[in-house]
Length: 162
Image (cartoon, rainbow, N blue to C red):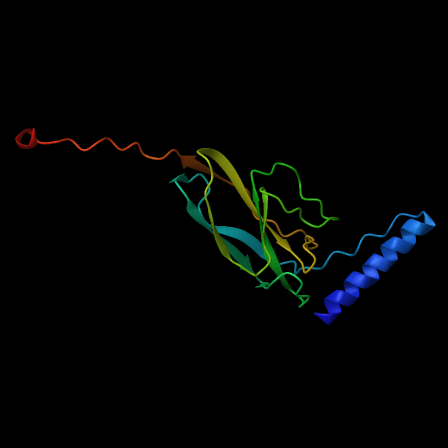
C-alpha cells in the first residue's frame, strides 16, 4: 500500500508542477504485458440468445488476476465494456460508468441484467491504476441477444372445476 501512495503522490506533484510551469503533464507510462497474454470471454458465447439475467465469465491466459492497486508484474484486473463502440484510449484510465464495469477486487465473473435487445460485451485488462496494458489486452467483441421475458398464460381450469 505504501508503494501505491508514493506513486500517487509523485504523479500528483509532477502534474501540479507542470501545470504551474505551464507545460503539459507527461502521461504515466503504460504497464507492459507479456506478448502472449490473451483475454477472452468464456461465457456467454458470441451470438447467444439469452432470456433474463445471465452470468459473464472472464478468461485470461499467461497473466494473473489481482485487485486494483496491486503492482505485481504480469497481473491486472478486469473491466467489462457493455455496448461500447468507441476504441479504448490507451493513454487514460478506463472510465467508470454503466458501460465500463470495473472488477477491482479481482473478480473473474459477474451477473448482468440487460434490457431485451442486442448487446455487445468486451473485456479490457487494467493495471494497478485502471490503465490499459501495453500491448492492449482486449477480448474479441461478442454480441448477445437478450430475449423478452416469457409471457405466462393464466392457468386453465378443467371442465370438472367449472
